[in-house]
Amino acid sequence: MINTIKTTVTKHSVVIGITLIVWLLLQILKELLPLVLPSILQNSPPKLILLLLVLSMLGNLILLTLVILNRNKKLKLKFGIYWDNETDPNPYCPICKAPLQVDERAFTFNEVNLGSLKLTCLKCEKPIPIRDDNSQYVPFKKAKELILKSR
Ligand SMILES: [Zn+2]
Image 1 (cartoon, rainbow, N blue to C red):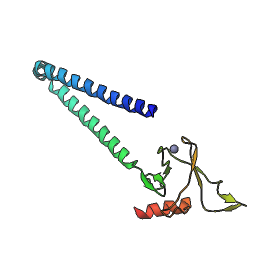
Image 2 (tube, protein in one colour; image 1 turned 45 degrees about the horizontal axis):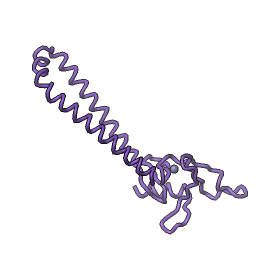
Image 3 (cartoon, rainbow, N blue to C red; image 1 turned 90 degrees about the vertical axis):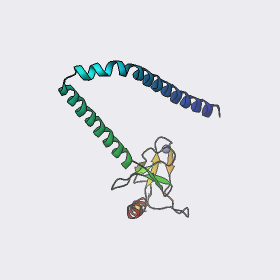
Image 4 (cartoon, protein in one colour; image 1 turned 120 degrees about the vertical axis):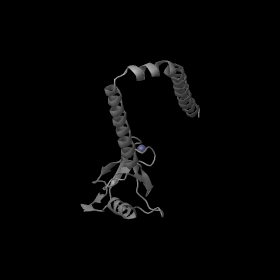
């Protein structure tokens, strides 16, 4: 309980601190720009402005790429665990969203592969079962197939 309160207070303090810093920077820019901007525009060569424009476009391109890459890593909850959007979906922990370790030997009994895998979260140190809506175990490969079909 106390740890939760500490974490919440810490998070809010950081957000309030960053907001205050951004606000102060904006106030400084608001006062400084009208004084400095006209002389910069008059005295800077067109080549410099063109280079700044190219730099700005490159920055926007990098940001757009990062946004697209992060969108692809959006995780969906299915069969009690998270899955990514890869063509070969990877499992992620339902608690901490860390990638799950796949152990193919776990569900082999008397040298017969039962067609399932054991998934373990190394961060939570827990085995994670794959279950359907009726709490029945679903083999890993079948879960992957069903996820690919549902797309
Ligand atoms: Zn975990």
